[in-house]
Image (tube, rainbow, N blue to C red):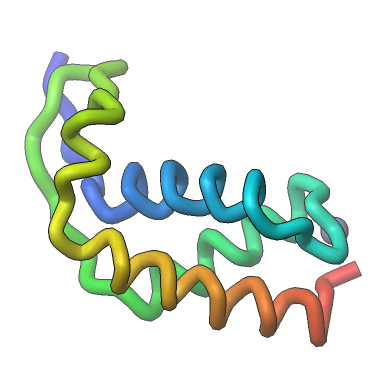
Length: 88
Ligand SMILES: [Zn+2]
């Protein structure tokens, strides 16, 4: 079964995980993480590709992405915004 996948979403998920290991978020509950992801994805262009259902990118593929730095700076902004005005 094939599905459309937003590649940017995978990258954001991966970079956010790394970010959270390095910097402590004021709140790292599921809601705040989802808010940060949504805000980050809204800043970035989506890149859809066709993938097999359930297929995930390897760390090697993710680490070689050219726009990782761009994703990280979007996450920094989003994390700050959520920390300033959390949804709960
Ligand atoms: Zn929270």
